[in-house]
Length: 147
Image 1: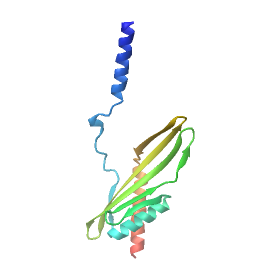
Image 2: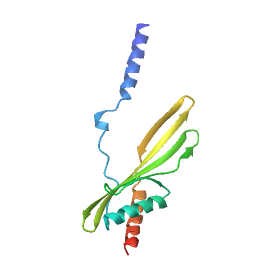
Image 3: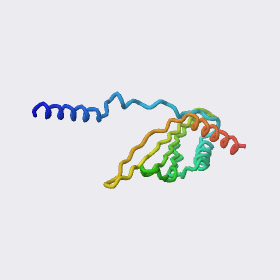
Image 4: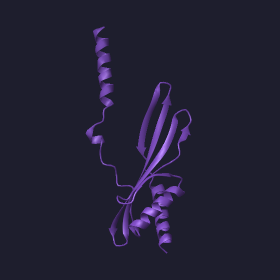
């Protein structure tokens, strides 16, 4: 009886210890979404807003002073799980006379709906091809609007 109790306590301790977040797992994300573009700061903000809308995002927040542009996708149902949305954030900064640096981050947010409540999770989407195409479209929009 004591051995069974001890085994259960040890098993629960190991399971609960594995659920914690260690400091080493909280490392800084890779700089996957930053690119320098040719054009003005104002042109980059306007082009980013336009491209976000072209990609189907609804603009939530735009702050010209800080160079922040935020958007969100429509809520999409996920079969047997709940709903998912995508949030996109861009920060723009002037780095040269005719050069801006832009960083785009896309976050997938999943809400799982259960009988007795909901659970929420989010994850950074790492899709270099998608971001590369988006930067290309932003650059094209900047060049088209400046002519």
